[in-house]
Image (cartoon, one colour):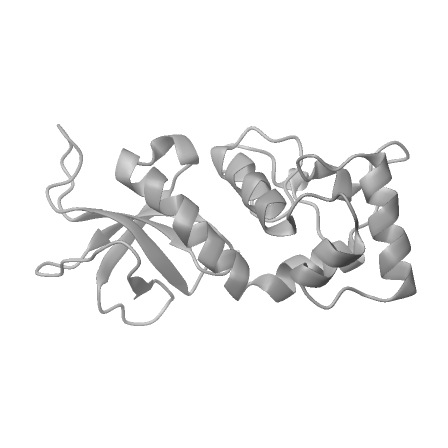
Length: 190
């Protein structure tokens, strides 16, 4: 689950306090939401919200990818920016999230993957399933309109993304588990 592009959350020109790395960049992957630390090329000054190429080819702004990080590793500036950037990424990746609502299935006989979203219990889950069986959801607004009493789907997704980015989840829906966690925790719905 590699990203081709990332959005800059914070640029630390002189690196972390007491650290050795200069030009440290904290960023989030545009498609797979990987939180990353990058090292910017000499002479490059990146700012929050900048999009940078991090794929396999020649990288203009990034010298190398230092590695994946968790929400707890973010600077305070990066944490503040993450909220705004996640909202934009949810809008851009709306199709991916609607697909989840349209295709999510049970995890076990007692739990459904829709219930992994914050504030979604059995009643909401059954209403979502009932509505998608009548007609597939077209967008997040459609979900909000057709499933009464469901909190805003964008906010649910954002809360779930932040929980997964923090690490320590039993199951992962939208992101890959951190490197030190079992990859079998990832729920595939696509």
